[in-house]
Amino acid sequence: MTRAQWIVDQLLQESPRDIPAISFGMEDPVAMARLVSKLDQHKNRHVIGTFDGLNLIKSGRFIYAKDEYGLTYFVQFQDEKYSALPGRHVTQIAVWSLGGHPGLATYVFWNHLFPIHGTIMTDAQQTQRGRNFWVGVVKQAFKKNLFIYRIDLIGRDIDPLHSYEDFVKWSSTLYGEHKRHENERVVVTDAALVKI
Image (cartoon, rainbow, N blue to C red):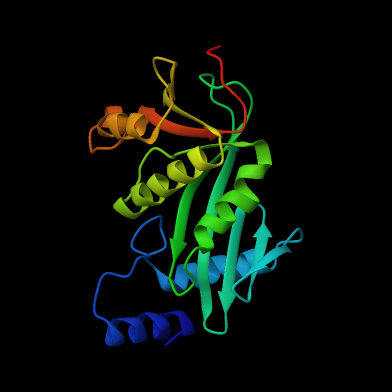
């Protein structure tokens, strides 16, 4: 039995439930361990900070943290450009955590992902936990006096959200199982956007 399999077995024994890794291809602990090993060997791998005693390691388009048992946090992001938005932005495309370090994902978001371009956009498909995370991000963004927009990637509509109530109003178009929801995104940015 590998260390990753042992961790999963321990988690299930202590609290039988769905492991939060059941998404983003992280459901296979052996594959996850291989990925971390590969990231650890990346020539540009480096520690970018610490959180709650954990080193935050950046390797390519990944940021992750490990403890004595293995991987505890992982985010994959893309640096991209959509024609509906001026400039480049970052999109988190996979966020995974075993828990035990509350606030880690939010810390990485604001301190390591958002500063890349000052613009970050939701991804096309979100779990309920992802949606809840973005509710928190939007609330924090309003407190930080940042700009929040609803973007329709196909129609290239950019609608400013001036309040949390605006965000709630648009939420039904942002999330859902229908394919059209994949084109509706939320953008948080440090500069006002203009339609191109």
